[in-house]
Amino acid sequence: MIEVEVPLKLTLFGEHAVVYGEPAIAMAINEKMKIKIVPYHKMILKSNSLSIKGIKVDLEEMKLESEETSKVLSYALSTINFFEKEYGTRKNALIEIESPVDPSVGLGTSAAVIVGIVGGYSRYLGYELTREEIAKISHKIELTVQGLGSRMDTYTTSLGGLIYFHKGGGYEKIRGEIRITAGYIRRIATTAEILKRVKSLKEKNPDLFNDLISSIGKTVNKAKIAIEKGDEEEIGELMYVNHGLLMSLGVTLPPIDNLVSTAKILGLKGCKISGGGGGGSTICLEDERARILLSTIGAKIIDSGISQEGVMIKEINQ
Ligand SMILES: Nc1ncnc2c1ncn2[C@@H]1O[C@H](COP(=O)(O)OP(=O)(O)O)[C@@H](O)[C@H]1O
Ligand SMILES: C[C@@](O)(CCOP(=O)(O)O)CC(=O)O
Ligand SMILES: [Mg+2]
Image: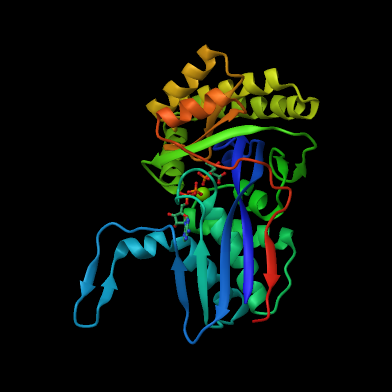
């Protein structure tokens, strides 16, 4: 049996802008997606946190027919099919995915599912991929499924730690400690849908869009220096600036905008959305009042402690 643990992630700065070549800073956290792969007589996928809306069942064979299912399983299915296409092999297995959070809440579950299956299923096939190789393959798959996207989530969940992604490519681990209070609410759209909306904004108003995106890039670079210096005041101020720029891109949601502006008035050091937006995750520099504010919007608080470890793959002889 192969057991895989993949850290989820928080985007501290630079979401959306990183898709257009700007820098970003993300952090792997202690919330871990777990994937188990055991030999089986056919290919079965089990997942604890998915739900589908609307089903059609062939009552003769009790066979479920649902467009929605293949959409919701798109990341997992594309990853399994990747191996068949690239390696020409398909070894039946029972693949069980256990997520600590709901899908599509800005915590990188899409990336974690891909990274977990790439890491676990490649090992199941007898390959020993490095974390960097897992990240590279996973980014390719996530991009194929989403049509748009950056290397940020797949690299952060594969490699672990606090990572600065350079403008135009490459990355480096950042020394520095940042303590976050984080929670999430359900979303009104998936990241793929939100990415498409942001892209249409770019097409409609390229000059304005480019100014907004490069302002986010500047914010990210100032934040990197502030994190390395441990300057919490500056980090927090830049979180509010980044949130305001994301608001201009139209990816935030009123309840979260209200929370962020209330936090600023109350004197919390810094808050912003994290990830694709449209609801989902909100992060603040660690503060008890942030937990209270998050609970007022019904957010589920998560374990946002940093995970220095990236994807962990264990082979267990049964
Ligand atoms: N536990 C899971 N099992 C299978 N697929 C999952 C799971 N969690 C998330 N996914 C996939 O990832 C998609 C969510 O990706 P995305 O919208 O990018 O949100 P996130 O912010 O979590 O990355 C889901 O629609 C589903 O296809
Ligand atoms: C919006 C984006 O910058 C981050 C998406 O994060 P998530 O899938 O919402 O966890 C997209 C990307 O970087 O691929
Ligand atoms: Mg995602």
